[in-house]
Image 1 (cartoon, helix red, strand yellow):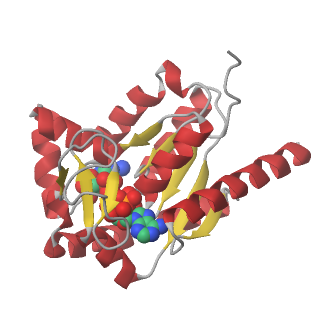
Image 2: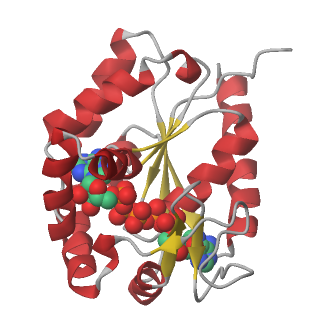
Length: 230
Ligand code: AP5
């Protein structure tokens, strides 16, 4: 079988609930590259009761960010694996300027292309509705929404019948903290990537399938213009 063509590492950037995870899963599947969600990695550690999971769980339940050193170490190990050789999608990382600088250094040291960031834009009202309505399959991680993307059978995953649960950090008081952490610590990354001419803006209000189509078209366009500029 022919190897998948390589792509620039992608960073999906945006506030909690903007749809990064939903799009990262479908775009990664279409492009044949792994989706790497730091939030999912921490939730997996927490479910397994590891030391890292215990530390991360407490931080996540307050709506704050896990320390840069812990996150960067975890991502460095993950992107060094062979399945990332042709590209990958980072969902929820980087989230601070120091994380972005360290990612830049890691990619340069390993001779890989620099990242292309995709910024998801959504109104505050829709963010809160998306977060409070989110349900996730305990078996496969598929993401649903009781308002916008309900499962066929209430409380059960369409793919495998797994139970759908609500994330502990999707309670309203934690959501407020997460949005404030985003404004303070993550929003500066928009300028960071804009200054490097490595930012694509998307209107994240569109329905999921439509947004996936637009994203794939934008990425193809970007690849073509980067190719013709080379
Ligand atoms: P993380 O898991 O990354 O959460 P987040 O960034 O807050 O983002 P979410 O997963 O809440 O939202 P999303 O944009 O992926 O939206 P989704 O696709 O699910 O992080 C959790 C915590 O881990 C952090 O608070 C922090 O403590 C820690 N952490 C993680 N990474 C870290 C890092 N790098 N540094 C430090 N700490 C870190 O969609 C939301 C809902 O909307 C779903 O119900 C979905 O079905 C629905 N929906 C999606 N798209 C659409 C659409 N187009 N139309 C209608 N509904 C839609």
